[in-house]
Image (cartoon, rainbow over all chains, first blue to last red; front, side, top):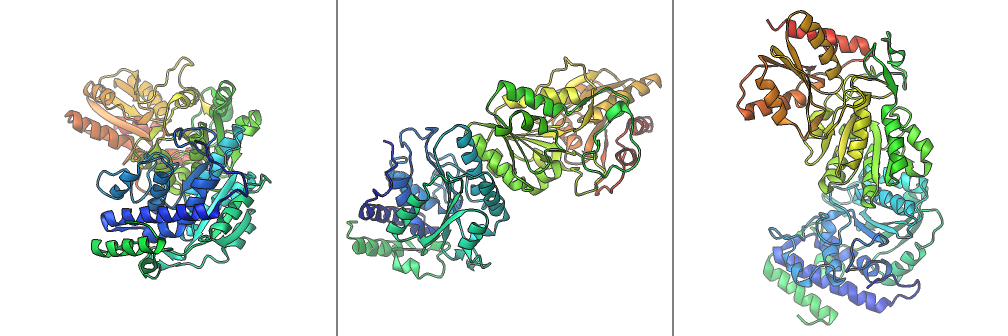
Length: 282
Length: 329
């Protein structure tokens, strides 16, 4: 099945339900090892739901389709969100999700490109956008109208290579390249270590057409993605303000939301609370 | 050097001939010429550079195929990342910069963005070892050691124009990432046109029984000349040329070494971590216990100056090879 909905056709309520499903998958995954980058995953769930169930053009049964849209997860440690989306999209089995982070599981805590549906090795931060530039150039050489979406984060913008890539994207007029910048305000050492504001102004100054939205507002997300479809010789940046742990109050308010580790009983409590709040059965 | 003569004086102007050799026939921009030929037969070959197109001989490719050429500016991490992305869309990118920048500056990108995924990118690295008088910032004296540590990366150090042309064609056909050192500008011709380059194969260029020189890169030219001189002095000298640092032809090295009295390695690189280390490792592994004398750069940064002066000072000349071997006693 090929997906890529016409602009303006988004069923926002249905996409919100998908995002909820993704969040539930992530909680299951995190429970498996008792830990994970759950805060980031929950925060980006709405964006991944909008991408995989509305915006991206792809065929889950033909992952190597040359004209597919690419989604590059540059922050490899957000893999928990990607596994949930790939499972829900029918690319990897839902039953496999519980193996997240376990020995010999292919659902690593940081993405490797050996798992189906993964387009880039993320994790060594600052690698994704440049590779997105290269893919966009390659697609243009092939006269393909496929687009390249690169997720990166606010902390990741501290890697200088991000800006090398940003400069080249506007220089090469890559209007099929969309940067999705997850600004969740956390990084490894705590709240953002270097102030990256004003984020949107920086991208604009580098020649990108820039939007700034609440990344947990599904309507705003689908509208921004629709706006980024224009082929006007400019790369697109969507600055996403997201809440780490979004949808799970106990994680939203946690000080350790960069990497969350609690015991199984606590996970069970969180999952029960979540299921109840979204009206889902265990 | 152009015109075949040896240039004196400092060579600090960018774009001046800084490569190697003297007194031999030479070919102008052998890499660029070969890449153009490749581009004519294959439309998946693309060229990239990071603001060093003029100085890495890739401009003939740009002129022939402007659509397939990308200059990313002074941004070597991005150079490698963009090349990786192009490779993921089925292209065969040849990305040029200086060796120092491709290694020290972009190492994580070469390792993770390219080698970890076995992407089909060819990095062409100018100013290898001591081929510029620009000093430590521009002399890639430890690049072979760095690059051979990257899993799955093929590492090549060609000797002359013939080998550069042959290797350019061969690495395009090879599936996987490659790091190749580039002698730019007017490059001497040492090998006959029929010379065959094969990735991972060492080549015995000269038989001898007293001393066996195992060499790579332009030092093979010096080794051949030195062997000629040594022969006249009654020292029978063989030469094994090892243009592929990785995968390393340990078998050929062991076989060659067991047929000579003494072993001398010669490389345009620090004498540790590169060819010499590989030779010692492979001999040890094969159980061949022979003393190895290493010709290469010392463990220090090299100063600015004229290339011929510096090469003479640091022992990378024919005369220095002869002197080292006759001094072995």
